[in-house]
Image (tube, rainbow, N blue to C red; front, side):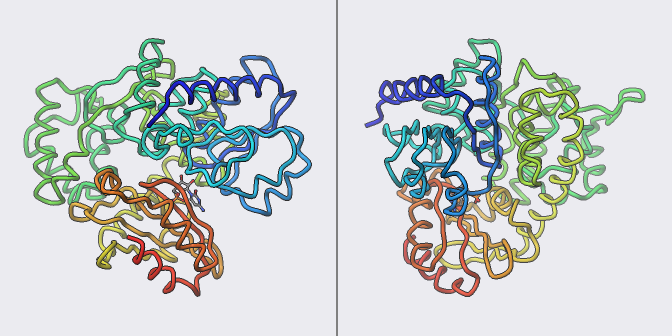
Length: 437
Ligand code: C5P
């Protein structure tokens, strides 16, 4: 049974513990949820005019813990609960996380400990929001970035608080990236979630599609964006896209075309920062391209940071499109799961994002995607669906067990998990993985 009050009490306890710290080191994860939760914690220290420092990391392993042994005050954000090694830290430690806990040491604010699922009901950014009660928009960005969509349970409570604070609004609309910021053709040409077969990456296809039902692409000299369209034109475009997707991809893909969207009202309107989903892509672009500090600077509205992030965003989206197009053609059915072997093709920094975006068929099975981390090591990502989780799938547990059997390290959530394994143990790993599905 979930106990909301006990969770909120723990969050308050964590905030009081943070208030007693003099100048903590905030260690946070490098993906969207890690950057938004780290920045959220930082924004609280700044509001209080208190000192802190930050460090973004890809994973919390034994080597990192050894480095941290002498640190007097650490706040882990979006990591910590899944790393038993942190028991070795003797300083003052607070963990704000949503990964499946693998130990009980230190003060942990984690929804799992109170009967909530951190994979779908609250992300680390949401957990940090309930601790610090500030920057609610970053809480929404983290949840959307961790694909905790549609927002429900603790996420929904956070959303409602954001709406009543006047910082967020929600509506039902087209979910393609660039609704407010991209000319129509680019909206389709660069679509990656969902991927639009025959349109994504195909200029002629986009021109043909748009002229097919007479929506003008320009008003005078100005290219029109989706948000410039009349309600009638929007309906026409959305239903044509839904039909196109149902016939060329799957009904499941077309169901992802429209949904709840979140506008962040205190961020510059008409930019990626005003839309939770676009903001989350921008943060992934920074974090997954070794520029985590830039992502944090964007969250904290530092001068020049948004402008600097634009190049990274363009590069990241190009890599995603190439990755998705490879994945769509090369995902194999391995019986109990789908396998995408993208070693040497898709970088380990975006393999998880691509795995979460590819939905071949109606995706009745989990997908396992492989990439190369470094010589001799495979970084793998696995993604399920809400339906599979409801039927009992727990990928975090499966990966941590399967990895333990082959000398790897893995874990995460029931719906999304990742791992690193030795390349020469891949066959054993696949057997261990399949046997647990
Ligand atoms: O790396 P990837 O994006 O596939 O990870 C999916 C989820 O699993 C993330 O929340 C990540 O933090 C978690 N994970 C983990 N332990 C690992 C690798 C990933 O908890 N060794």
